[in-house]
Amino acid sequence: MTRFAGLSRRAAVALVVSVTVLLVLPLFAGGYMVSVLVVMLFSAYLGQAWNIMMGFAGQLSLGHALYVGLGAYVSAGLFVHYGLPPWIGMLAGMAIAGLAGTVIAALSFRFGVTGTYFALLTIAFAEFTRLAFNHFDWVGSSSGLFLPVATLANDDVLRLRGSPAMFYYILLALTLAALALSRMLLRWRIGFYWQAIREDQAAAQALGIDVFRYKIAAVALSAVMTAIAGTLFAFYDNNLYPDTAFGISRSIDIITAPIIGGLGTLIGPILGAVVLTALSETMTNVSASLGINGLKQFIYGAALLVIVMLQPAGLWPWLRSALRLDEGKT
Amino acid sequence: MLSQITLNQAALTYINIIVAGLLTGCVYGFMALGLSVIFGVIRIVNFAHGEMMVLAMYAVLLLNQKFGLDPFVVMPAVVVAMFLAGYALQRGLINRYIARPEHELFLMLLAIAIMLTSGMLMVFGPDARNIQLDYAYDSYEVGGVLVDKVRVLAALGAVSGAAMLWGFFRFTRTGKAIRACADNQMGAQVVGLDVKRLYAITFGIGTACVGAAGALLLLLVDVQPYIAADYTLLAFIIVIVGGLGSMPGALIAGLLVGVSEALAGFIILPSLKSMFSFALLIIVLLVRPQGLLGRRT
View 1 (cartoon, helix red, strand yellow):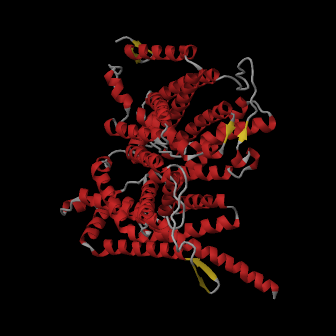
View 2 (cartoon, helix red, strand yellow):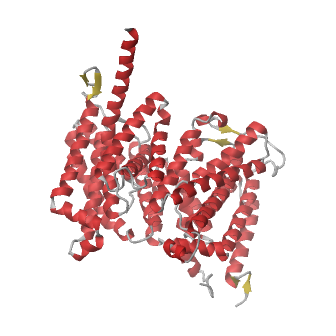
View 3 (tube, chains in turn purple, cyan):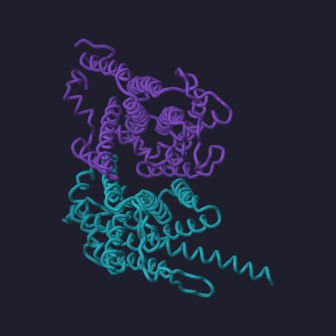
């Protein structure tokens, strides 16, 4: 079979077509549609970052909003107070989020906290930080941190001031980069180590894998990638509140897309984001026209239940074989 | 002389707060018991625990407003209904996920939690509501310490509920069988216990327990659909701090959290009160992950 960069022909064609569609989509979509697509890409990218930790290395985090919030607040705080350009602030946010992830992971794994306990610990750290930021005056405490909104004629990528379309292309680039990185990681030694740890930690340890170190590496990498999205969130929304930035509902949003799409798969987080964003938007419109409070979340919950009952392993494994994209590959 | 009086008054204020915290803590502990029982036996984490409690709170509120019934009168009916709901949920949905990866069950319970919260939002609206009782503002005075009547009643209800639960697990055949399942599921199956049925009963007991706790908590706090997630987290904190599967542990941790919330709310800031609970959780998980009274497995 003809292969292109290790992909089967059908898969390569599907990839090229999808990327082309995504590249030209904003040219045909209205302003509202572009903002929906931005939400979708945020969800896809964050799902990819979370997927590295949970899908590849098997470490469940239910507090990923912590790293979003840190990435957002560090870069936005430095920008508001010192005028530091967002891309440099982003590096600072990545460093701090990575450090936080490393410390949390090192503490937990050193003390033998794993599985459900580790997941609850990640919630505890996120909630603790949320409450602390609610009283952190340097970033506006609970009344919020606001970035000056400048209306510019042209998009300014260097200062991250611009239209939703600019953020769309930045996020698209990030999502594709994360896809490439995830694919490489799975083929590198570290990816095999992670999967060994995910499947059976004791066996991995017996084979001489430094389990402690590689688990920390997964958490740190995931945290750093998540912080990038945090910075973009801050400069896209122009306002930050601890309750939304660090809130548990954001953590849950982050993990639903990759689980629905297919945990541990490369395309799963992206597919999950597409499906859930479309579902969520449809429900918003339906419930807005009916004027019933809470109907949107109710149907969203019901749909989630149906998907997890019918395809507990996620939609992508099922779609992949339905489209015969996995021919000649295991 | 004057300083003596002010000192006494300061001491009294603190005693008042600590007593109130202890009484609220009894209800917290009872609520967490439901979660602890479910985890201790079935080894699953009920991520919809707070949502189930809020559902029971609305049921009690509704019965009170429609028929003017006292919460303690409607409690048995609500508890039975919650037991049946929990039993059916375990039998119908959760059971098939027990042997599957944790995150799938998590997602399913999350979906149920979302549906419960938004369902209650649709039916009852987003406003905070409270129960109207003619004894709501009565209080007892014991040696200068003022204690609210509703708080005493709620705590008494929680303690007797916990005692009944303890008696059930200690003395009844079903209770012993459930403990056997918790100790050794394979062994329980080998000696011929119907593990599926016992798991369903256990889940029903857990939801009944949180339903009763909701009826009691309604005496103390306002109900609103969105408070559910906070109580799910609170139940997690208490159960982990006390030790998963340990009944006295859950009660003691409930008291601890109740007092620390009350004190932190008074001394520092009310909005910071749950930060101390999370700090407590972090410290316990790192220093003593099996919890205060838990056994290391």
